[in-house]
Length: 105
Image 1 (tube, rainbow, N blue to C red):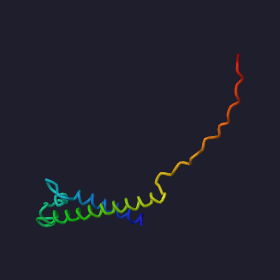
Image 2 (image 1 turned 135 degrees about the vertical axis):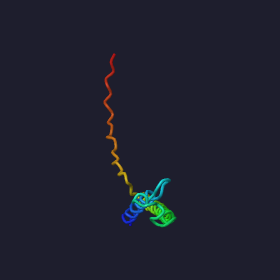
Image 3 (image 1 turned 90 degrees about the vertical axis):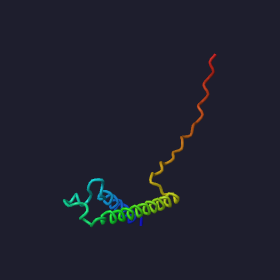
Image 4 (image 1 turned 60 degrees about the vertical axis):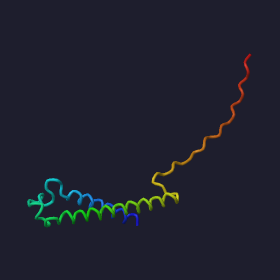
């Protein structure tokens, strides 16, 4: 379950990155990058609506998968599982009292 959710999370992250990078900036956009004008690639407002919906959906899915992975990870920590292995505890060797030194006069 965790592996499937992690793979989905990475795929959604890549989709989110691509959808943000493909959105039109101040001077151009995806249509201008492919050699055409930005208005004729998807219509007059086509890429703005489509890419904004894809970005919103990817952002929501990214947050949901993030919360689910956090929840699953915290459940494993409550059962004694940890990412960092515990160091073995070593007890100190027993100290034997040293023989009393003879008193000097």
